[in-house]
Image 1 (cartoon, one colour):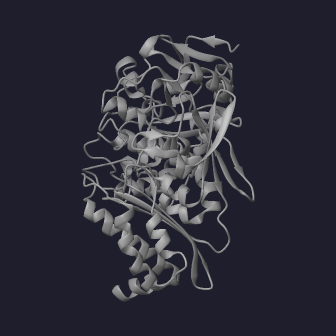
Image 2 (cartoon, helix red, strand yellow):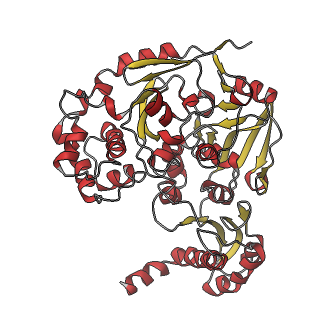
Image 3 (tube, one colour):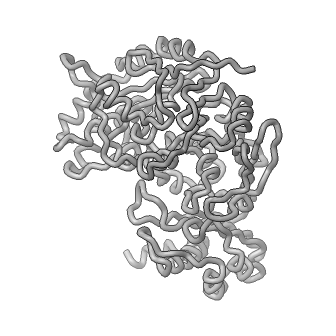
Length: 487
């Protein structure tokens, strides 16, 4: 039987925190501002969109201590057991010199009203620790999740590039004291299950994935929470009662990434950030999509498994994974079964997952040599925006004729869905512009999209058709020629 404890333990800056009365739905930002009076982190949006609340969270991974930026406004305090939370107040004492990141922001005039500045500094701090002299692209990616209305980003980018001229990473306390911090975190991880509260307010942190299987089988109505990049909004925006809650984001057994000739297997707890290198190595066509999934704070917290388990019709990863032929392993107790991803989504809000059953891993087959594959995300703004629609295309062309086709879209139906009629119109036909044009009406058979704040139904249908055109043109090089002619 798994041992339990009734306190949540983590490091907050230099202090060890042990909480007995933490609520299941309490957000880290509320804990920092209301309980600890650490008010540098701001609430701007309460949905992980503006970055004003950004803090760093350090976690032990294979005995390495990794610090990443996250949004405190949608991070449940209960998910932080055994971690190190770092806020803006930790960078410099009130009577001490500015931290190099802060000094760079001052020197480059990177702040005006100052509301968003602490979050920007924390995002740049995370960047600085992994890339002391970042270039333009690295700086832009690090700041995707930080919105600033008054400064403009040019001085902030200049500050990012000049951080190391104000100090060295080696002298930073998080780096200089890393071994001591690792020892403190190891001591906090005692292998026990955390249980706090009762009823709807019950908070559970399983000790292992086997412990999770036992707990969830006994509590099938509980809400599983990993990165909370979607579930967090159920609380902050919709005020839903979602307890009891089981926090699974730090289960070591769900953090595995396995690469073989057959394909790629991701544990359900692997975040977008951790998955990126392996995903782009295996499927280079997904590089652009991956860098447009939320901002960096969202990618550091959100998981591929959670994106699938949640079943949103506008999730970013399902269309691409369906096109690649992915499958998921579901577990209940000690029983496992494997389901094709395209069959996992049944209807809006309904997935092929039984009570007490959870997504344990995702398998993505290797892309066959010669297959043409692409994925496109359409949004109102380029970065950190929810898809109006997202389309993935894979075709096998032999001797100029389409031998097989898989097309999947999100945002076009109540679930991520294949375009079966379009696929049928392509298979057996020459891979030509004429074939594409003849297949376009079939989109109206496959999809009856809705109109909402992100796009009208007509726009979605036209955009989906144009993406098929784009996919075919890019494969022939015609798209490049067209761009050059327009330019």
